[in-house]
Image (cartoon, rainbow, N blue to C red; front, side):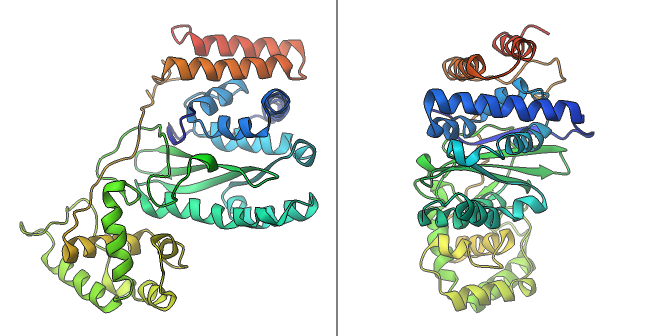
Length: 364
C-alpha cells in the first residue's frame, strides 16, 4: 500500500535553468501519460500521494533528491507539461506556489466549466481549503505552507501535495494526501508520513487528542470562559503546578476576541466546522486546546506525526532508508512508465541510468 504522508528536505537557493525545466515538462508529462495508459488515472493519484515514489520521480526528471525545489519546480513542470492534455487524459492539476496556491478554488471552477466536468467535483474547493487548514493549523510543527497542488480525476478523486517552510531549520516539509485513505480530515488523515522528527509538535489530529477536540468544540460556545482562562494561564505560566508545557506560547487573550466571537456566532457542530471557521487559525486552536486541558483535564499529547526519516546529505549522499519492497515497486512503476513514454533514446537512457543509481545508493 502506498505510504501517504510528509517528506522533509533542506531549502536550496538558485533557479532551475530554462533548458532543464523544458526537459522536465516533457519527461514528467510523458511518465504520467505512460502510467495512465498502463494503470489508469487512479494509479497516478496513488503514486503522487506516495512520498517515496514522488522523491524518485523528482530525481528521474532531473532534480537533486534532497532539494525542496523538487516539489515546487517538479510539480510546476508537470502542470505545464500536461496543460494541453488534461481533458484528454481525464487528469487535472491545479495550484502551485505562493499566490498560485491561493487560486486553486478558482482553477477548479475554471477546469470544471472548460472540461464540462460533473457538478460533484464542487467539493474539491472545500477539500483544498480544508487540507491546507489542517496542515497549517492542526499540525503545528513549525512549517508554514507556501505550496499547494491538487491533482484530481473527472470523478472527483484527488491527491494533494503541500509544502511548508521552516526558516529556523532552513528545511521544507512536504505533506501528501490521498482521497482514498482519508477517513476523517481531523483525525490522523496522514496515513504514512516521511520526515525528520522535531520535538514538541502539537498535532491536534492525533487520536489521543480527540478528547481535546471535543472539549474545544464545547468551549467554542463559551468565549468569555476561554478568555478568562487564557489570562490566568499567562499570569501563572511557569509555575510547577501548571500542566501546560513551556515550549508552546500561550496566545494572548486580547488577540483572540474576534476569532472566538466568530466561533460563537457560527455555533459549529463538529470539530471540522470549527477548524473551517474563517479567522480561526493555529493560535485559536492552540488556545482552545490549552484551556480544554486545564478545564476538562484531558492532557494534550505532543508528537511529531512522522513515520520515516530522510538522511540529509550532499548531492552524492546516501538516500533515505525505505522499505525495499515498496521501493522496488516504485522503481518498477517508473521503469515501465519510462519504457512506454514517448521520449528520445538519449533522455530515456539517462533517466534509466539515474533510476539504477537510486536502486544502488552506494554508486556516486
